[in-house]
Length: 135
Image 1: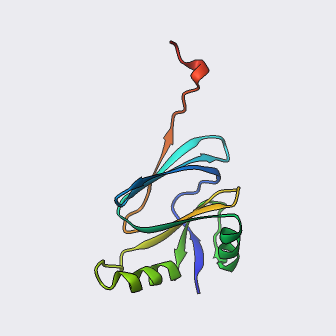
Image 2: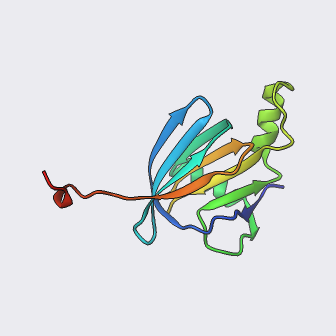
């Protein structure tokens, strides 16, 4: 059975703003609960999926959450059916023993699920307000 576990990132995301990338590298731009803008960067992405509203609600409801001990929006999916599905379709062309399933969700019912063989990097972005810039 699939279950959720905290990742090393204890961040609560209010809203996923943008998903940018391609060719195995993806960035997620998000606003945190404390109004910071962050970038979550993934390299070596094998597969990902994005869901909003009802599709996300149903998937999240099925997870066993007893291993989630801190309120965080960046979680790991253990015993992942998504990894099993990927392995079946990859037909041995990619090693799967190092792949992790990261689940990033926001408080507005959007979620991104990422299969990768490396941990993401989270950085805080400095937002420049157009009224603060000199012309």
